[in-house]
Image 1 (cartoon, helix red, strand yellow):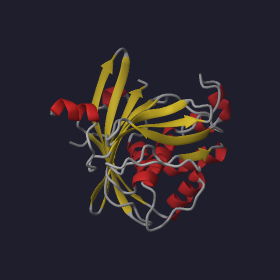
Image 2 (spheres, rainbow over the protein chains, first blue to last red; image 1 turned 90 degrees about the horizontal axis):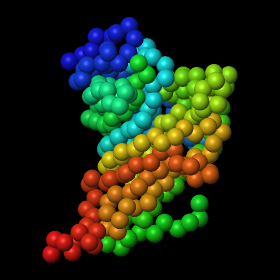
Image 3 (cartoon, helix red, strand yellow; image 1 turned 180 degrees about the vertical axis):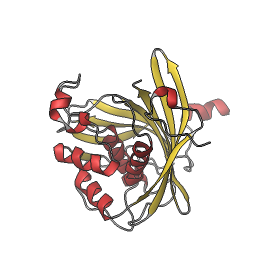
Length: 134
Length: 146
């Protein structure tokens, strides 16, 4: 199931199981330079840090959950990392789904399932647990 | 860091993760915003952030999560890992973060992991498991099964 893109991703727009979208990200020179600026060291092209998969997961999620109301809180996260370290120039496909959307104790919780995959399969699977503003 | 990381003989697993640290500043969040397409003004705009309960810009939470991922890969290389964490508190832009972790029990292939500021305030905490690692069960578990 693929979600229709709403005018704004407010809580009512989420359907459990629906795919918000897929984004293709290349670990290109621009991504590696920014990562190096954040973490203060040059990336190793043949064995990049898996933390680039984490930033790719966030980039993919933020690009499809757009526009969204301000004030959402990233409350928790699961990550399963497997496979070899990513490489410079590798293309990643980031898929973001709504796994669950529910209200509890007056808060609106949305749990997103994210997968970051290379050509040989998933490298990162995780859940982004958020408290949605409205 | 010169502190020696010891390993348990029966599992070969270290007692602690290799820590990783990061000194942050406005340029850190500016680059991370570009990297992840997260331009929330709570991270980037001092005037906006001053009017929020945080009183000033805060680091993206996943900067700390990325640092924790680096501590895990420094310790275990490309082993399969399963991580579950909570973001406990925001860290102000300018804070220095350190990611680390300690094994939960003797023989266990599981760790309490965290990211904290220099004043030992934890901003991330959770558990790391190594699904592909054969670990000896804790001694009290072994006793019960006999």
